[in-house]
Amino acid sequence: MSDFLMPNEQNISEKNKKIFGELKGLFGVVPNIFAAFASSENGLENYFNYLTQKSSLSDREREVVSLVVSQVNQCPYCLSFHSAIAARLGFSNEQILDIRANDIRFDRKLKAVAALAHNIAFTKGRIVGDILEDFYEAGYDQGHLVDVVLAVGNITTLNLLYAITNVPIDWPKVAV
Image (cartoon, rainbow, N blue to C red; front, side):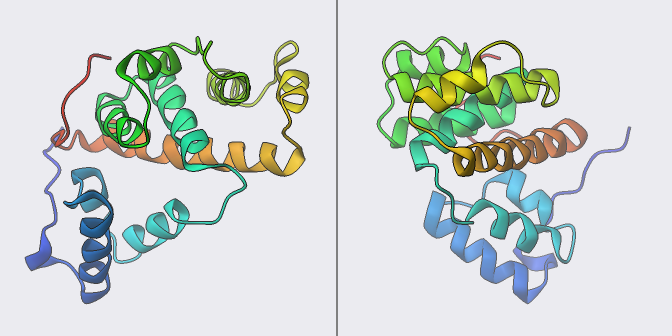
């Protein structure tokens, strides 16, 4: 397997340089996984648009999806990155571990989102048991369901890109 060559600001298009600037504004740096998307003329823009799309899910709900799916997919980069983002959003270290384990006891709605995202990722969308009913009983609707599916697809894309490229982890590393 050959090493993946990381793009940098000197060898990317002007369009991607602009998005690098936006990423720096969001995260303080250009995360390596996003830099990898800049290998494609349109990849970074397409993913960035996907990342910043409107959603009925809150930032915290989307972060729960990212953590749960990254744990299912055993992605060390995404677990490290999203643990840091979750902490910025106010989750404690204990809560982050509970989310990753799909064992949320501190919030009924987040528990329902996590269970659904875990099920979608683990079974490739084949809903098992009462997970969907629990999701709706927690106050969510079909629009939220679609947005959870989109969020699962979003983080799965990152999980796959990391698995293929193995870019250096540039966030505090967490155990998988």
